[in-house]
Length: 315
Ligand code: NAD
Ligand code: UDP
Image (cartoon, rainbow, N blue to C red; front, side, top):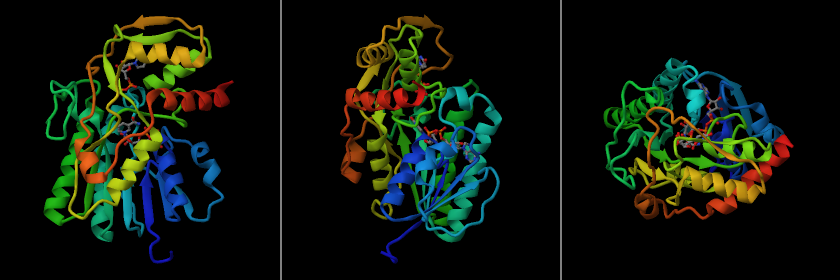
């Protein structure tokens, strides 16, 4: 056990995905260092784990260098919801780009393996559907989503240049829309918005006509894939798509949330934000082949768990 224990750094570990990852790695017996500036993450997300002697939590902004001794890094620090990443767009780009440089520098010095939480947003508003990893994407470089999309694209570039130039041991996952317990209730993402609105009897806000699609992955499936990727064979860098290929329109999602929560809320239509992708669905053939992974949780089952979580939180 002593020899197989890893010292693992998780940046953004107090966020939605980071807290689930922290929980899983602690369960596996590893030593985990969470680094977070608590912009969107909360200490509450980790409260149930704080008694574990293998967990250390440090307030730190990844746009500044970090000197610690570790052998694996999961780089998740970055606000993920459009509302949050557009709040201070310059800081969002800095977090992705300077954050990647700092964490790659740390990986280079310590010879740690480093995994980047990239995103389906690198495909922008795609013309190829579903999206395979070989598709280069269609991203507006100067729009309101660009701080996030281009920041993440530049981070991928840095990962591959560190790999080519310094032989850094990298892993890149492109995460598609993920949902589940511990999403922030005011996060602004569609699943949390619809559930909170339904539970509070408020109008369900569909942006646009609701015909745009997303493919939603339950958090447990996603975390399983991320850990498999970190521990995948030497030399397999990715990028690899991880997500659930089940594709739904936002109107279908709204109707499902209403049905599962038993809510009487009504659906209202609001204007569509600019550059909002019209469709999104992962091609996960590479993840199936290389990670022996595919998602198990159906949208309906995952939504039931998430609705139960928000009920406990807000009612
Ligand atoms: P989140 O907002 O809940 O978590 C992000 C965490 O990063 C928060 O704890 C936040 O406080 C922290 N953070 C932000 N800026 C930081 C900085 N400069 N220094 C240190 N910490 C900082 O979002 P999430 O859904 O958990 O997403 C985690 C990662 O996964 C992000 O990198 C995101 O881009 C990526 N991702 C998520 C999804 C999704 O659907 N959840 C999809 C694609 C990609
Ligand atoms: N959306 C919506 N109502 C909301 C929040 C979001 O109709 O209250 C739409 C949004 O316009 C987008 C989709 O839901 O088409 C997913 O939005 P989210 O912010 O969750 O993620 P992303 O656009 O980054 O995939």
